Image (cartoon, rainbow, N blue to C red; front, side):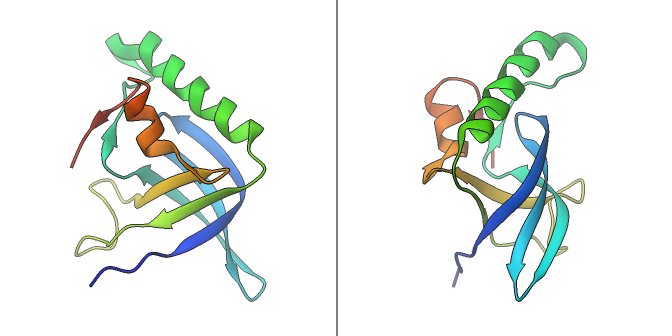
Length: 114
């Protein structure tokens, strides 16, 4: 059984196209700041030979989030550790009810990655 949990994002910082840090509203006047990996996609890195493409994807994501009236994260079923390979929480990122993970794949900015 998988559960779908949506949490409002109070503030955010984009590292690259598939990694953000978000302050998430947990309800009951509680919030937490976590590093998140956008689940199911892979984008070019902002360092190394992919830098130019990585910056393009990062800026696309920043623009989408800057323009959003609502930003939410949807949690994914965790691994045994509760996080991905590098300790990041696995999420689907929503802005104005649009799944940004899928939008990046649709727009050719990301590849599916599972």
